[in-house]
Image (tube, rainbow over all chains, first blue to last red; front, side):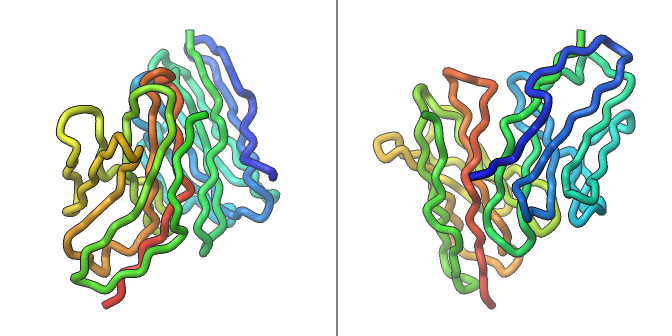
Length: 112
Length: 114
């Protein structure tokens, strides 16, 4: 069965650079969630989208932005990267009204 | 392989009655266990976690969970359900042997009826 696809799996960037993470939800899923998990930390909710509109916002820094496109994939754009942005970023997708919340395997971002 | 199972897609309970949401896990090492709640169109909210110590863990909003190592379970409980508890609940596990991995169950929808 198709799963949530995230790309790239690993990314290494230098401070002050930009990064773009992509998330492709399960087909038919209309909601995407982004989480950040720092080393030894619990996942922190960043932002979510439903039907291409932002539906909830968590602890997402102003340097980050995200959007959901017409094909429901989502991108997380991160600018002016800091060492503290090094983390595992994973997204999840779901279909409104149905139980079932599938997570991707994540993108590991390392800022050096 | 590490995994988390929530065997019930949906749990229905009347307001004022006790509720239980089930979770079992499989990890290679010692587990860190978590419960999260999600309201419609919202991100996950942390409820409680078990790291070590007392098997009964108390968390937010009157919820508690009991770690049972022999049964590899971490069921979420509340003595008296509220209508406002209706939401989606996720169990998650982190394996001490592979600390950067965080595994979630598929979620259980809790319906509390007045």
